[in-house]
Each structure stands twice: as structure tokens, then as C-alpha cells.
Image (cartoon, rainbow, N blue to C red; front, top):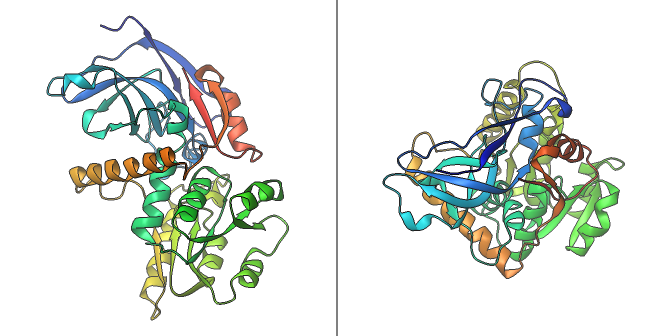
Length: 343
């Protein structure tokens, strides 16, 4: 038995960040095929910002424990699991449940974290790294010498996308507010200010023949502009609807509209392609294949971290008990990188 107590953050309903609740309880018992992981680092992603507003398209019913991913040490292994995993550091993509001191995960969902990578550093590239890697290399299949646009190039996913693209020999145009432009230039990115410039017009000036791929998390009108920026043979990858975060009404409608646009664009007689990327796609129908691909891709991302192709961007490290402050900071739009929570 584990002598420590469980500490977790509960999202009770649509609340302001201060409405998040800290709950104490017993550490859960490990079951067959499971691991009990002591969380060392988890993070605040855009998904949780949508969830607290009831705007994430497939979030569970309130109340629940948020937390899209985590990194931690295996404390106990369940029946049928290799006992040698105890004491090792692993990462996992969980969608919900990560904002807790102790988390049960299926052993098959655990990905080993290589030695020499700090837990907080690893946390910055779990959901962000998997998303960036798969969009870049599996969906858009970018090649050296191509030019891409990354919206929100200073953000969690965007900053990893920029670095992975640079490592692949790809030129990057990135949108961000002016305060982040110097940092983007240092990474070899041509910055565009989405607040004061006509984004589409400026990108056309930088790439008159069009770009090979656009990665758009904004949705709405931005996705339409992004489609128009593609060169023949280009690929649009939509992976969110950030522009509707504060909207009222159906949380599914923005995604359904985006899916409808993607279908329509792909039905047109042209050489461009559009995709709506969902990191969970395929899990329901082919769980083993999903897990194998996720493990392979996250291992590639950790390798890029070890080589220095990716520099972890940690905006702040805060204890789980200060989750309200962490959420406020993440939603402020003033920081670059990941807000990391620790026990």
C-alpha cells in the first residue's frame, strides 16, 4: 500500500479558475494491466481552458479531474504487468485525470522517458510534441526546402512545430503578437503580427507562390484564409477552434462546421488537401495500432529533445494547489511555452 494521500484538482462545472477545487482522498488501488504513477509534472493545455467553459467538444460530464497528460514515476504495477516497470519514469496521454498526485493508467499507454530528461522538460512535449510531430510528419508529410505557416508559433504546440520543422529543413512563417517576434526570429521564423497586420496579405507577400502547409488551431475565418494561402499540392491541417473559446452555445458546432468545410474543400477539383487533426483519431477502432504509433512518435519527440532539436519552453512551474493561478496565467496570452504543474 502507498502511504501517501491523493491530492487532485476537480472541475465542478463552468467556473472561473478560482472555482477549481482541491480534493484529498485515498490513493487508488492498482488493477490488472495498470500502473500507479506518482505524478511529477502535468500541464495546462488549451483543452482545459475550453473544458472549464464547457467548450471542449467531447469532455466528460461535470464534475471531473482535468489534466490532458502527465509525466511521473511508476509506484506499483498491476497483475499482468512487468514488475520491473516500478521505479521507472513514464509519460502518458490521458485527456482527463492528469491533475492529480497519483494517477492510474493502463500499462500499454505508458511511454518510457529517457534518462537525462527532466520531468518538467518531458511534460512540455507530451501532448504538444505528439500533436506537432504527427501533424508535421504523418499528416502534412513536410519535406526539406518547403515553406509552412504556423499560427500561434509561440504557443505550446506551435513552438514545438516550429522547432521540428526547422530540424527537418523547412522554412517557417509564424503568427504571434509582437512581443514574441524577437524570440521567433532567433528560431529562424519570419514573424507576422496577427493583432495589427492583415495576416493573409502579409503571408502572401512573404510567399507569393503560396505555402506548402498551414497549421491552424484558430478555426472560423482563419481556416478559410489558411486554405487560400496554399500552393498547388499544399496541405491545410486544422487542429482546433480557439477563436470560439469564449462563445456560448453548442460546443460541438464549431468543430462540425470545420469538419464540413474540410469535407467541402476536399471535394473540390483541386490539388490541395485539408485535414482536421485529432490526436485521438483511430483509438476507438484500433487501440493497439494507436498505442504503437503514439509510442513510436513520442519516442521520436523525446529523441529530438535529447539532440537539442527541441528546447523545452517552460513558462512557469507551479504546485497543483496553485492551479487557479496557473490557469489564469495560461489564459492571459502573455507567456510563451508551457505552464507546468507539480505536486
